Image (cartoon, rainbow, N blue to C red; front, side):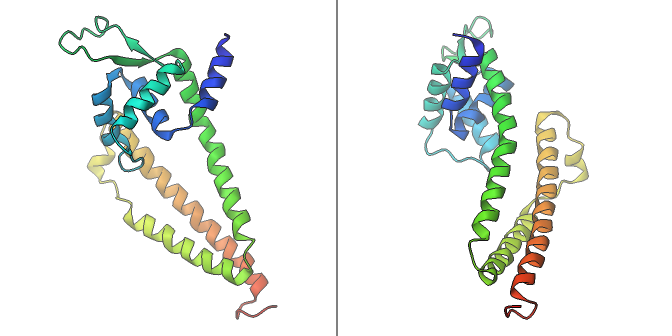
Amino acid sequence: MGEGVLTERSTVALRSPVGWALLGLVIQRPSYGYELLQRFERTFGDALELSSPSQVYNALDALSKRELIEEVDLRELEVVRQPKPHYRATAAGVRSYREWLTAQVHEERRRARLFARQLVVLDAEEALAVIDRYEQACLAEAAAAPLLTSEEHQIEGVGGLAGRLLHEEDRLAIGAKLSFVEYARRELTAIVGPQGGKP
């Protein structure tokens, strides 16, 4: 089987965000199941929820079957005391992970297009009410986002970088959403009329 076929099949077949998150953790460093569970909760606990710890083991099994990860000979890792199977990413796993991350741009755009199309099926007054609630949700999200202290901003390493990237993505995304709100409100108000009556 050619590499392209494996990558395409693997990427299409793996739909679980938990599976992709675990693959990322294994790419970061080889690990065993329980350690991955702990790392998953520390890294993704505020964004992805596990239905149970067994979800990690099921995802590892799925990743292994798709040849995105493989068991490591423990002697390579110089692990003597822990006979637990450790996993590392395969070349196909790293490639698939990069492709999946890139595809998230398209998924975000798809959701934005879907929201805009779902919004305009409402009459203009109802759509304005949704826009008002959407704006309130954006403002609440912005208020809830923790600000990085100057000390946190200086933290080196992957954890510090992830925090800074997330903070900047949140700031830019909320700004873009609020700009969309302003634009949508102007367009809908033009349809409804400034006093709420039909023009």
